[in-house]
Image 1 (cartoon, rainbow, N blue to C red):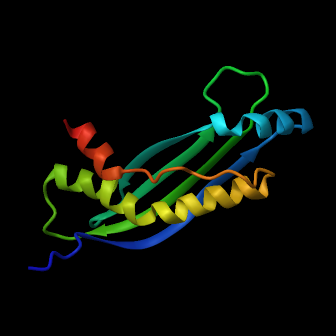
Image 2: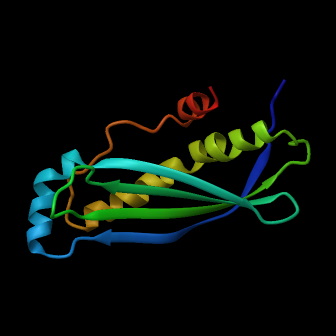
Length: 142
């Protein structure tokens, strides 16, 4: 039995993109510490109408330690989806928003953020592992 997708992505776009390195000192400091930077992900959503949902996925790549000199990188990626009529349970909707859509758009957001970092003067930055949205969703649900 083939399971059909319970949603369709209608539109996706970069809502906001930010790369902030205020000066040369900060750039040099960041360049030496960029391996300590961490990725934060935040997902918000709101119903538009007629089963349409706007999902905003925010990736922040930033220094967690309290240091004076730090750079800041962020992408807010918006996805507009249409949810199938058979989706009525809140839990199913949450899984679509927080897990299924995220797995689908993640490679694109990661590429955008890495291109931003590389173009901002940090060509060696790589993300060691892919975000496991299934795991995060299940962890959140328990």
